Length: 106
Image (cartoon, rainbow, N blue to C red):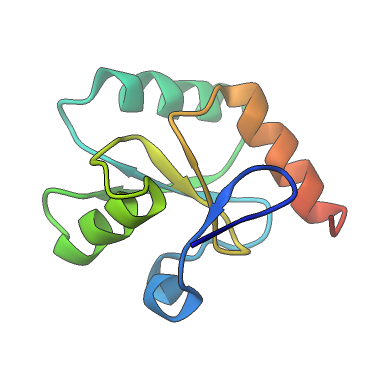
């Protein structure tokens, strides 16, 4: 696991390949019962950020990836970006800013 310039964690690309979104989108590792997840997904929808939801309780590999992205802690929502970077429980503005960095090639 390494940190990018923007401070996001990076997970091993080969393991996350099935979960990597297209540039400009995010994958949200979440759970149905998670209030933080629901609020973030609603905010992403309002801001027009495309996302794919992966329920970690239904996908053991997704759960492992979220734990790895969190330094061994089970924290959600965990967002995965096209470059393999991840943010944990970010504010919607952080997501938009990180997507802009990726689109700019930073």
